[in-house]
Amino acid sequence: MFRAAIFFLAGVISFLVTGWLATAPAWFRSLDLPNARSSHTRPTPRMGGLGIVATFVLILPLLWVMLLGASQNWLLATKFGIALVSYVIIAGVGLVDDLKRIGPLPKYLGQLLAALIALWGGVIFLYFNLPFVGTITFGWLIGALLTILWLTGFSNFFNFMDGIDGLAGGVGVIYSLSLAVISIGTGHRLIGAGCLMLAAACLGFVAHNFPPAKIFMGDVGSLFVGYVLAAFAVVTSNSGEHPAPFLAVLLIFGTFIYDATFTIIRRARRGEKLYEAHRSHLYQRLIIAGQSHRQVSLTYYGLSTLLGAGGVAYTFAGDWARLLILLGGIGILAGFTVYVYWYEAAAQRARDLFASEASAEAVEG
Image (cartoon, one colour):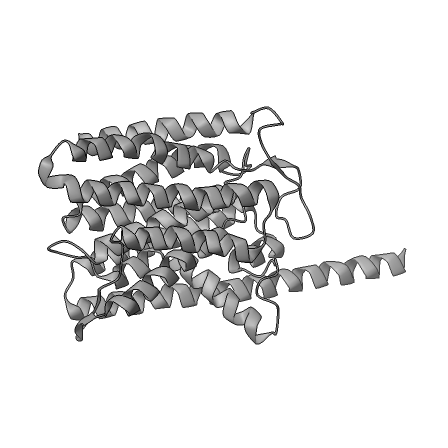
């Protein structure tokens, strides 16, 4: 009942705040103007992610106060408060970038500060579990470095993938729900409630962002959602009596991690400058090839649901089943990549055929 109430309240707050932002006075909001690299054709308000952030800022303190009410929870409540500070910082970094377009270095330094505060609050990798291998334990220094790389890396990956209507928000709902299942199933009930809150907040935002979008998430939302998911994943997989296997988390987040990593490697091999804006992600290539925002977003919803189910199954399976689930996830992503290349080639053949027929008709005419 408690988690259902949180889900409902978070969804309502996010929906109302995002709806207001979509029609807010011009002096308050920032417009995303289309350019050569854009996937939209008309000026659209960004900073819609403030609705998601507002949900956390309003509800998380209530949970914090509830924890403080029990003396045995004072340490957990302190960590909870520190986590909230880091969430506000990452949202602030995204908001400043939405308003002023700061460079990549200041942006990363802000993310680094948020990650360091999370470390101070106890969000850290201490071990990693592998099928047939067992638990690999890290020292504090290596664990801290891995945590910083993960928190800043995944928040940036989520930001990279926020490029078309409905994609980041809808996938955020699926990621959050999948992570909620494994968090609650492994005894991390508070993190599970936080995941449900994030899922509902993303759902309230998607109601205004699903194609055709009335408002965009902006960096304030994409960096925030990616960072919060990454932090929840660390706590779920590195604390409690029954920590979730981190490979399950990688499966759940697989669509965005794979697309971003594949694109970075592909661009690096081509000698492109990785810090420059581009339209080379797999989802962007499908858009360029002729698919609609709705089609591509729904495709990613389906892929994310399959991998999310795989991540949940992996959490509670034995070693051999886990190996098969991992191979299945890899097969799904590989198959999707082949599909993108096939669709691009088919679209190009159709364009060439149309051009040759048009040229022939012009000659005959």
